[in-house]
Image (cartoon, rainbow, N blue to C red; front, top):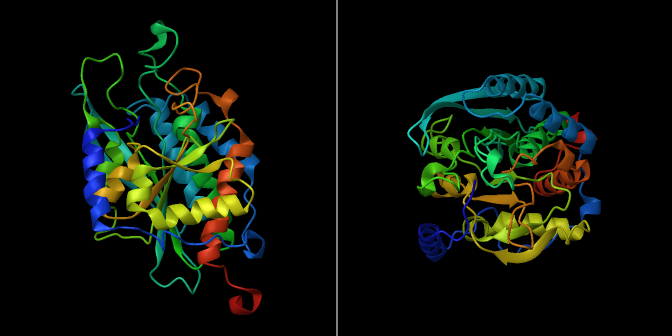
Length: 340
């Protein structure tokens, strides 16, 4: 998953920056007082359970039994709260020529009567990696991982967001997109390199959206959001393509007292699903992704240690709460009188 400081990406970002795309509102948008924003409660323990449920299937590598069972699980969960659920099958060729069958899962919570045609997109990837290529034990580096943080954490937060949004619909429809075959890029031990070997599900969806001519006001991608020491910086892809919504989220987090987690630090680009959604689908999407101060994502990244032992329910809850306040600040739920 994800390479930092790619030359081709930097060139693409330069041209995007020249085009002046800001995405999702004014890039200098001021923070809203979170105390006046009415939003539902995000249950961190429930999100944690959704993460644990995914991990319990085992490594969710494309083509595995665990992968098939987890897809069924996500679809069934989303049908509990969403108005529609679509499974988008696709074929993808990995860096080594292996062809796998992927499934993007797209579910929608319709907004309230004030939503009109407006919609936003919340996304994460749900597959886990074939190879623990960063494991400290060389013998483990060709083994699959369960990806508790790298995959399951973002998907777990999406499920809890769907649950609470459905009970109190905002004035915008929300599409939840679970991308597949995100984390199967070239491993470190391979004598090869291909930028576009990552994020194959989002590449496919961006070129073949589940709804023709699909668009959204903005998108927010969640990746590795369950680490025990969360830290999210403003990485360059998000700043270039989606500066408006990026600043809204970071300003809201700061106003909520989470400025030490959503740090106002600008960092290098990260290759993640949002890059292709921005470049290929033209939807301004930011990435809330673990980005440790040391320059690495987190200690257990792409190792067999990426398990539930290193997932924090508090981190999941913090991320979910910030997103809910951000969404309802712009798209409030109906008041009691309006609902009648």
